[in-house]
Length: 259
Ligand code: PXP
Image 1 (cartoon, rainbow, N blue to C red):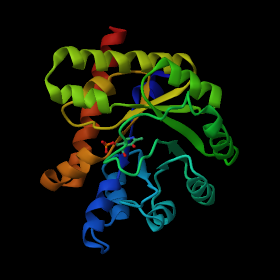
Image 2: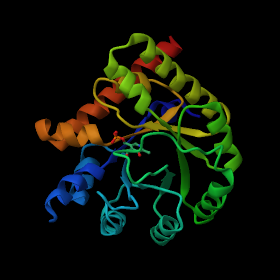
Image 3: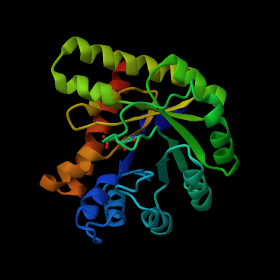
């Protein structure tokens, strides 16, 4: 991995919750595709959208428009179901991130049980890969799950940072240290196993730096905080500030490694 490549940490902006607000009134505003355009202008490297089975935020037509109108690579988050597979194969986004999905959950609460669902997931990973789509598995930073990703042939894992984010908010230093240590170990193990490591969920201005500073992590996917904070600061400046915090954490961490 070249120094320059390792240094650049990609930011995928998740626009799901622009669609959540739009859907609250049933019309067209605010338009998640317009948010994706704004994200591109503010320095995002990719757009992430989760097409849920219940279409509670992103809808099929949003995916169609994101593919047609946005020049950034699309990372489509989806459950491993036949319906979603058919949609992915029709649109062929740059990447698909397979996520666990339960209808009653508020958000994606835990990582994919990749180890326990090997036989279910294997044909999905294979068919997506055969279509030239980069497949990622959204997993907890756990050795068993990382090894399962390797045996499934997924080139990428996204480490679930939700427990880390909750620990940060809890003010419990020991819990926070343990969750961060879990991410540090998971990122190292994943990279050591030859996986490209991404991370995301619950990241904010306040908690992004330690994750952004992990040299093995190549991409962060961030949504809810950016959309919420945009109410106060505007989407452009919110994304620019997140980008700057990520870049600074990266520069500080890599600088201290080579020092
Ligand atoms: N990555 C994955 C795989 C996700 O499912 C989500 C939430 O949809 C995110 C990242 C972004 O999480 P948040 O909206 O909390 O930033």
